[in-house]
Length: 297
Ligand SMILES: Nc1nc(=O)c2c([nH]1)NC[C@@H]1CN(c3ccc(C(=O)N[C@@H](CCC(=O)O)C(=O)O)cc3)C=[N+]21
Image 1 (tube, rainbow, N blue to C red):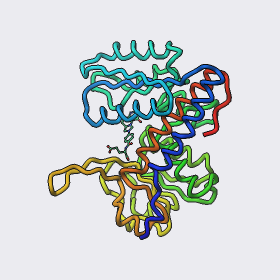
Image 2: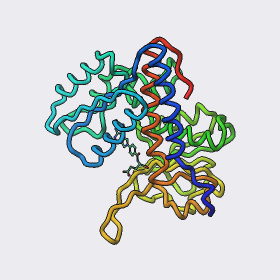
Image 3: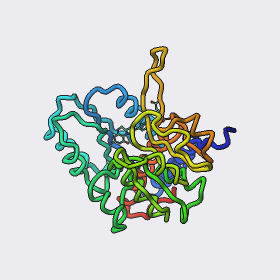
Image 4: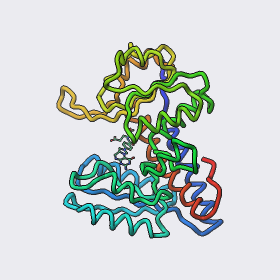
């Protein structure tokens, strides 16, 4: 298949970060406010360290302030709650991201629940999840699903009326909010998962297929409806026969790309969008804190 069906998330994310940087500059000149993002990393996981470093770098490149907090993996829940309370109270901090997963002595729900909803740029807090589900009040929308929606709407238009969307995966971080966003854009939505009967058959019905299961290359080419738009949220590090590691998605990419109308690669698809939307959410939070309308991004 020609490369024209590849959705270039890396390029789209770079464009979004450019618009974020413009909105940061406008806020600075109008209100003297610089949006600030605090990222909290507990423990030494090497992959997490890379993500946190990338986030900090891109935050600074957008003209924003970055506050990094690295804590040892022996950190107690009370220590982490105290840090979140301090960040909640800090007017220079408009967004707080506590990197997941957390060590097992810490209850992630308690920590996420303690983040001020206005500063919950991940959109994981129950208040933001509830706002997204009900339409009551303006939510912070989780970064990965919102990034997926932006890529879809760039291809298919804002209104997804008449389209069948199948979301494979039901996590609070991706699957469930993704389904809400697709519903909000008028798609007809199915949430499928590991216990779904005839998962391949469900996938074959999808005009829009979102893979968010966390299993390397599980979704095969013959599960994809010809012409479908495929969004691969998976980021799996697998070992190659040569003993090196390689990133793959949840979709068997080369097979699926033969059939799909459009497909996101891994890397270079959804991943870069997640970070760009994180910055966008943080700027939105800073505009709201300054009493301004949400910036158009
Ligand atoms: N509270 C919280 N919020 C998160 O958003 C969050 C988290 N915890 N914990 C970890 C996951 C993972 N995550 C990624 C973001 C960007 C890429 C990304 O940019 N990936 C590049 C490749 C990066 C590489 O080469 O390793 C790509 O797909 O092209 C990947 C993964 C955010 N997460």
